[in-house]
Image (cartoon, rainbow, N blue to C red; front, side, top):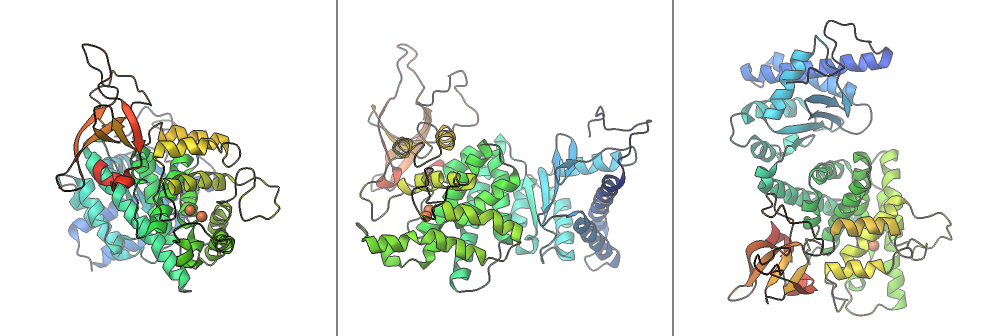
Length: 496
Ligand SMILES: [Fe+2]
Ligand SMILES: [Fe+2]
C-alpha cells in the first residue's frame, strides 16, 4: 500500500495543480499506468489474436513512446511505497491512488524493482508487450518469481524490455548468477561490436547500452560482487575480458564518487570500448613475448587513436557518441599529461579518462601476460600504483580506487602462517562475527586445499580477525600474497 501520510496526497483538499507541461505529463503518466493495468487484466481473458487485446497493447506502446522524451529508455520504478516514471515521483491523487496502490503491490509481489522499456527499438512490439503481460501474471504462482522471470525474459522477443529484480540476502545465489550472466552478455556485445567494425559492417550501440544498463543496476545494488567478478581472466580472449573488467572497475569507482546512472552507463561503455583499436594492431606484436622494438611500440601506441576512430563509426546519436569518444582516446594519457597520444594539450585529462587509466592499469598488471615475467598480486599492484599517485594517476581517484578494493582486494591469494592457502572473498551476508571490528588488513578468506591430482578445492570461509578465545591471539596470519592466476586459480570459480 502507498504511504497515505505523504504530504502530496490530496484527500478532501484542493492540491495545487501543476500548470501546463507538468500537468500534461502527469495525465500521460496516469494514462500509461492505466493502460498497463488494463493490459494485465486483458491477457487473462483473451487470446493473443484478440482485437481488443492487440488494440490495448498498441495503445500501451503509443503511450509509452509519448512519455519517452530522450533516446534513453522509459523507466518505471517502484521504491519505498511510491511509483516513479523517469525518476520523477508520481503524485497520488484521490482518483489515482487505488490504481497506483494495486500496481505497486502487483510488481513488488513479483520482486520487480523497475521496468525499462526501450521504446525506440524495433523489438518493442505488440507481441513483446502481450508476452510480458502474460509472464508477469504467471510469475505470481512461481516459488521464485524473480528467477523465473529473469530466465524467461532472456528470450530475444523481450530484447526491448528489461526488468530490475529485487535481490535480498536469501537470493544471494541468484544475484551472483545474474552478475555472471550480465558479465557474459557484456563480453559478447563487446566482441560483436569489434567483429562488425573490423569487417567494416555497421555496428549499433543500443544492445550494448542495454547490457551495460543492466550491469549498472546490479552494481548499484552490490558492487563488491562486481569487484569480485572483475577478477575473471580469459586467456584466449584477453582483450574482451580485460575490457569488461575495466568497465566494471570504472563503474564501481563512478558509483563511489556519486555519478548519475546515465554517466555510469557512458563510463561503462568507454571501458568496454577503450581498447577497440587493438583489433588493428598485428597479433604478433600484440602478443609478442619479450621486449618490443621501438617500431613495434609505436604500432601499439596507435591503438587509443584507432579506438576513437572506430567508435566514431558506431551508429549512435551524436549525444551518445560525444560521451564515449574522449576517454578511450585519453586512456594512456597520464595525470601529468605524459603518456600517449601526445597532442601538446594543456587541458587536463577528463574525469572518465582519469578513471579509465586507473582501472586499465590495475587490470593489466594483475593479469598474467606472455610478455611479462611476473604478475603482481592485487595488493602489490595497488602498492605499485600508489607510487604513481599525482604523476600517473589522479591522487584522489586513486585513493577512492584503493579504498574501494581494500588492502587485500577480493581475489588475492594468501599464504598463511598455518601453512594454509586462502583466497580473499566477499564477506558473508550473515556475518557470524558481527561484533568483530572490521579490520581491513584481516579480510574474509576461503581456505583452499590441494586436490590429489591438481587444482584446488574450496574449504570453509573464515575471517582472519578470528582469535583464540583463550590467548586472544589471531588464529591465522598472512605470510605472503600471490596472484591467484600464477597458481592456475580462477578466483570467480572459487568465490561463486
Ligand atoms: Fe589501451
Ligand atoms: Fe586496456
